[in-house]
Amino acid sequence: MSDSTVGMKSMSVEELASRIQTLTIRENEVLDLILKGLSNDQIALTLVRSPKTIDKHAQRIYRKLGINRRVHLVRICFEYGYSGKKSAEKIAPAPSHITDTQIEEKSYSLVESLLSKGRAWDQLVEFERMLAMVTGPSYFGAFVCALTKVFNVKYAGITECKETDQCGTVIAYSENGELVHHMDEYEIEGTPCKNTLRDGRYMIPEGACSVFPSDDYLTDSRIESYAGVRLEDRILGTLGLIWICDDKPMSGVGMQLEVLGLIAPSIAAELAVQVALDQAGE
Image 1 (cartoon, rainbow, N blue to C red):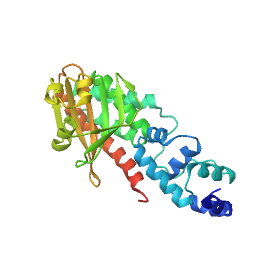
Image 2 (cartoon, rainbow, N blue to C red):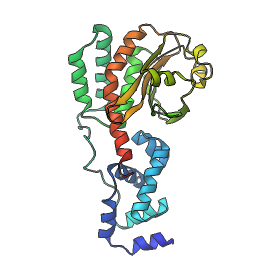
Image 3 (cartoon, rainbow, N blue to C red):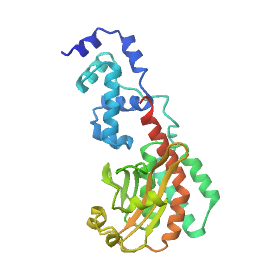
Image 4 (cartoon, rainbow, N blue to C red):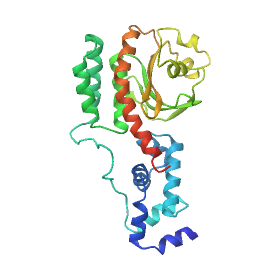
């Protein structure tokens, strides 16, 4: 048994509870999922964060609780009767009556209206009001699925990165209206994402593969068209981008860029919350 484990065993339940109280909201979320048996990669998918970010949170949890191994963390918590809790401090939990399907349907209805009727500000306000009650992974996943269906494109995604970053992480990705659960990191240089981050908006109606021949994703998926908009927060700055692409030429790209620009602030606001949760306690 390690020295750190012996130290924990000699502590009272009150001492352990006191240490757990020092964890941030995000660290509590990670601890809860660790105690449910999830790996760091599985936790990353659940919280829509990168595995590297989850590993940093786990290491801070170990340090704050005086434990240096995951197995010791799980054993000590269960021996003390702590099996994880749903933090009451979580920001704006989703009301039980709002389902992921309803979010997606609302997203679909809004964007379809914008495409057919122009700037439907009343519906946009109603949509943002509804999504203001919903946070976390379901927000991003439902949204990219709706985008592929409404725009009738094969792919849609949200990439998280700073404007100066060399790499970006795809935190939500949909193919043919279905959510694909993976967290891919890729180099931004030589991709249309680089142009989107630089210019704020970027589109390629056709011939995307020939414009970016070194982009393996475009060439492997035979992408013909692309439209993307930068995600920005007033305080945190550039957070990433939202994008759609297809294996056939895209018509009406100008209108699609306009719609993406209208919905980008809502996505940026939710992403800013997730980034702030990660930064708390650093």
